[in-house]
Length: 218
Ligand code: ADP
Ligand code: ADP
Image (tube, rainbow, N blue to C red):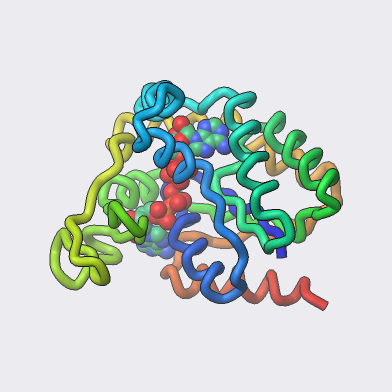
């Protein structure tokens, strides 16, 4: 199965990706995670990416497309869960080209919707495990012991860009640059579009997504 997961920052893409991978076993490729790993490597490219990400603006398409195409080709033959990519129409077109070359078309585009106010509350309370990336929320999905990952015992961390002013910028970028990607997929008419209400509990959101994806399997 090859699926694109879309939705504004904080809608719950990463949270649902964990559950989808567990159930369907596809490879999860998060552009944000790939960029943060590059940043953590301390490379020159990583420093450039970090400077952009801190402002809430999007990384330029040519950089994104090159890094994501490489990641996708590297897992050729596996199921694919793309999270956070594509985020512009140009990225969507480039993805189509890559997948066409691999003879591996998308099965579905899943869009998780959530209100702006809810998003800000979710993002400012988001914490994650520095090594596994497991996602928590200080209030909605707290770890068993405050500030500590349930499995590894490590201290949870907050992302540099998960501050309210940056979140507002990211929301703007989503509305201006990423929402047109949904229209792009609608216009091509080649892929199933699944719209899910992200304002429910994580388990209910997951049940909706899983049911829609399973309905598409023959
Ligand atoms: P969230 O899941 O909260 O929306 P991400 O981890 O997906 O956040 O993205 C964090 C930042 O990484 C974005 O604000 C942007 O700067 C950069 N980024 C991630 N994916 C893309 C992309 N496909 N195109 C451009 N920039 C991206
Ligand atoms: P995204 O990848 O879309 O940016 P995340 O999955 O990281 O979003 O979720 C953002 C924050 O909201 C996290 O702290 C997560 O624990 C929390 N969260 C995710 N889904 C829900 C939900 N359905 N209800 C309440 N909180 C949620």
